[in-house]
Length: 173
Figure (spheres, rainbow, N blue to C red):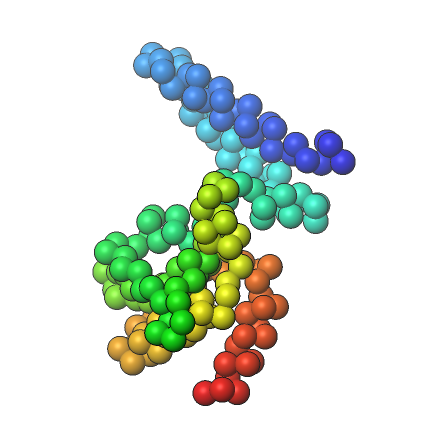
């Protein structure tokens, strides 16, 4: 099992070597960097194309895996977050709001776990409460009213809870 856990080690080693060489400006070092980058690309493709189920789980739980706010920061501009469900409170586990994606106004909804312990506790480890689902529904309704597409980022682990919420919400509409 230990060998299965460190399947990314060859990738990490090449990344370290590229970082070491990046401080040099001579042509030989630059050619070596290009060769290593090519090898890194091939190695990533090879490793990630044949992951075991456990390795896929490790990748999904990787601490540096991007979360909703990371995607919003890199893909969108002028993000404005909506807070609260207008009935009870705000749920920090759900990030919802409006932004621009490639120049088009969109709604954005997703969950956010948090990076450090303090933020994870504040965001309830990414586990939404009822008010978070109501906040998401609120943003969906506004997006529908103004005919805006919705970009979502949702964890598969929350799919069952989301399905239960959706079925409950559909009956209360």
